[in-house]
Length: 241
Length: 178
Image (tube, rainbow over all chains, first blue to last red; front, side):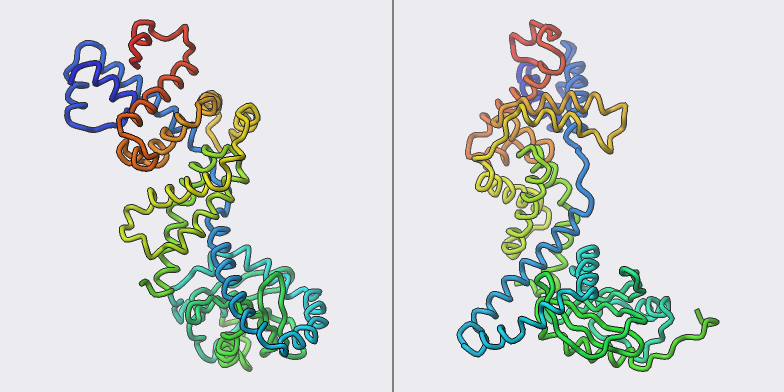
């Protein structure tokens, strides 16, 4: 390799490691070694300048967008079938009133906001251990009667004014978020929609279970699992905590 | 075909491994934070739909960058920003950077943004994307020699902008040498 070829290659691929390129750098006495060092300094400046800061939570927002987009596509397919039946229209009109009422309730809004805040949890796929489940519920003063099956995420979270345990279940290919609000009583089971999410409120023991998902088909399974785990869950004595 | 959990896990790993690199590439391609974020998000959504076609995990980054470039060409090519507008935003974007580096970085950023897209894009593909000249040539549908010339000129122009034409070694400049 001659000096001209070396300099051309240097300007095109300054980080090149080809043997003939490196050999010329190390053996040339016509200034190619110095040119190589100048090129490395320029390259370092370019790399530094291009390394701008990444927006915070970018990865979490992308995972949430993927989960939401998948959910919307599936819901559209479901609506396509439903539209074939005129009965669906009547049901839709009939439920309009309570959906509006539900949207004003603070729990769905708080739950959906928290779900967005911890969107990464929706992408979890590995089952959490019984020890993790016990530990996070114990942090809220609760002892589980049974281990909820299919949980892939658990964390004790504060949501608004409420102390909660945040779980995600993976039922088939869909994540279902379960937020257990301690000391927040609900009179009855009710379904709602909020910000595109299907939801359900369930009174269990001394709190309210809030379920959020793409659709409600997996809610019954999660509801049973949480009910088994929490129904009449004894509050731990303070000495145990 | 991957089962859903494995697929979701693979996607999650891809996002966490490459979102930052893709954002930087998108930012320097389109020159605007909000557009870059949209571009990265759309890229990953397309990647999710085509995830089964990714056979080799080591090829994930160039695969994602290819999707991003195509998405950019499709969505934003008609909205290329005026470079004069870009300079102001970039010059102020020194957050999170060592103060000693900030002045130098701002200078280089301004110079990079003065490069014509035909020089800037292969430079970004090489420096941020890790593409070889052959890979860039395949992406841009041109010959490797042409890519080498573009990269050569991109750095030559950057050097000239940063050092000033009068500061360049006249002999080297006349031969196009660094």
